[in-house]
Length: 290
Image 1 (cartoon, rainbow, N blue to C red):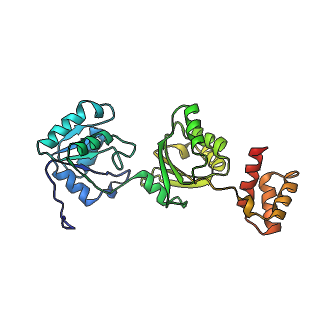
Image 2 (image 1 turned 60 degrees about the vertical axis):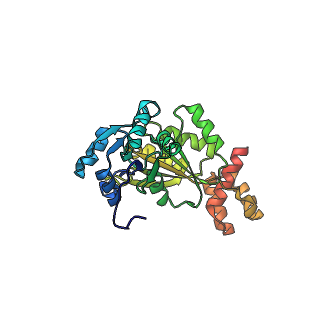
Image 3 (image 1 turned 90 degrees about the horizontal axis):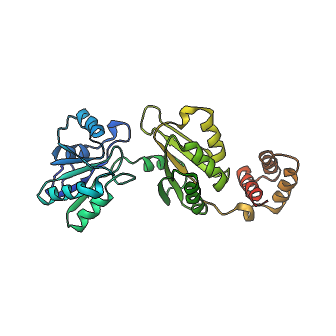
């Protein structure tokens, strides 16, 4: 085992190296040492990674490795380098390689060829967002980007309606509003969603609300829907009507005949000393059935 304060670079070894998702100060000492000492850096975008290397005065040569060439000649070329004794660091544009980035095919081929693969811990936008979301994090499901077309996106969301684990999505500026609108229609208006954008950067923001309110919040200001974004969606919860007093449900039903649901839920909560959000979720579920 390596000493705690010493990085030893092994021959014929692929290192999976996370890089910062925004703030360059988030790179680890070990990552810098690996990037400095390996034979080659396999980079998703050599221009982007070149800026990182320039910032830290690292002069290791780079090899372009991306979605378009991974399953073609690039993997074979890197395997030959590894088998010849070279060490290679795999990096993506930001965060941990393979998490919605190229590298799966290369790592699989390395393992099948008996080539050592060493993963380094480090930045990951999905986990960074989850750690600040304030929703259950003991079990979660990473879904990456939702499909670009509406039909496919709706089908994916429908397949996840009753998923009890916290859901993690990446989303683009161009589709954020459409995806949130589809979540309102499919998950219901009160499913709690957190939008984490521009994490670790100057304009970082983390905002959570029932998804219908979150959509309205995004629509109020165009800048709220710009940048690199992660959506954290609270998992499905069994309807709470069994846990609510029968008297409270009767009061809610009567008040709903004369008042908007939010107002009816608020008044019922005061009358019966129960949670307003639980009554509201129950009311929305009932409306979906009507």
